[in-house]
Length: 314
Image: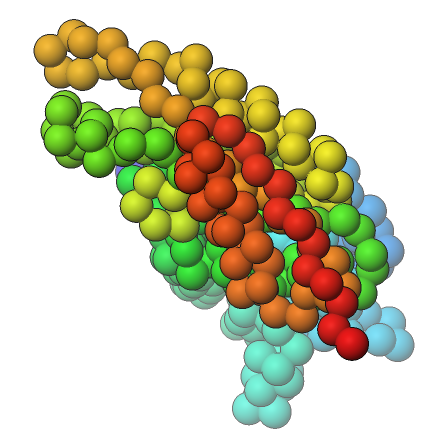
């Protein structure tokens, strides 16, 4: 098995201990180790800023301070580097203290040898890698729970969660907020004529177009079926109308292809509503945008209708 390169930061104010540690580390066949030695925590922090460090050996006693107090400062950049404490004393009290402080392991200096260091290195590196994989898996599960599988946009549940957050932000800080409901016209006829697989391709294609058109701060989601919902942050009604018209035109101009080579196009109807202080619940804003969408479809489709703001409660 090829030896793994490893850059280790050693923070210890005893040059003899550092040199002994270095010699033992060089005897571990599983790793090709580069040691960066520092005598103070300040030097160690500077080294972290300028070099890629994989692991830290930290002396338990550094002058009048304990190395355990330095662990939070050494991890200020939030990178998960394992920390192994070097101690001249080995007892349960010190072991418990090192774990509480966030260290991953500790090694008694009297027991230093290549085998002890190899076991400690392997243990902490495997632990960190396991934590990294678990964090990636959890992040992926969270992402999948928020997305609509077909379109890759937000699903309805997460969309409503974000709408609540944005309404609270608009209510507290005052930036304008618009909600857009977009529905593909006569979508059932597409499924009936070309099949559901082609219909799915249309939905996915429209979703990509929405993602490519809106800003990174906006939120697009599939509300259900062929209906999409867009939360437009810090957007006035006029700004939202301009975006809606641009989306309507881009969707109408996009060519889709059936399995038999037939080319066809789709249109959409859009309802737009703006948040006002008179709106106290997300469902009110949704209802306004939905009624505007209904008017757009009832008045001929392929158009944008703006909702009238609700009247303030007496």
